[in-house]
Image (cartoon, rainbow, N blue to C red; front, side, top):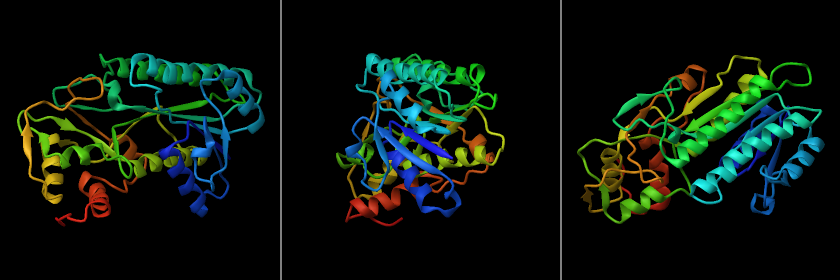
Length: 307
């Protein structure tokens, strides 16, 4: 089974290395596709490619005969146009290209975000919840998701089976090299305790783990959903995680009365439920923020105080 990681970055690299290091996946072959493959580690088989370039992507699929495509995109800019160009255009090219090739993939995994949800009053959301974000980011992500979902309804594989497309909505991704929150804490500013503002997160290692888990389920011909929320076991108020981090980083803090916002400057206050991905058999490596942040703090902060 050949797996193409389109737009391969940190999550894709981690997934590829996990696959190559595990004998359970000896029958899997991986290929990383990126605009600048020289940016990828030298031990990873990579090819130059751009999902948003239809001719380039067609040539790659024509010559690669991939069975699974995992798409992890990054917008060219944090703007409506940036998300339109990267996600919506990418989804359109993906669908139109698959229509043209003779050897079609069996499975597509499209990485999206819980930013598609518009709930902001502390509600619980799961895969059945209405996704109605009013932000440009959420709207474009949902537009791209719908294009990817349509592939499962309209296109078949070479053996006349419908192509399976799976959307994974990750919550706030953290881990090595993703230090925005830690840098904020170092400045001594944390969220206010009241009103409570719920946050959700997932370690980048679990992002890669969930992708591999879905591919593995499919390879074993087990049932998989069309949609999963990828988030850890513990939604937590912004004040709780930030005050915990500040305490163990020995940082003197000052509460900020502003409600935490996302990149669209919109209030974020919801709780994401991960029951569906857990019920499918996935076991989180970092099930809560403390498990995930302690190794990061030990690595990056010599004054870290053990809990």
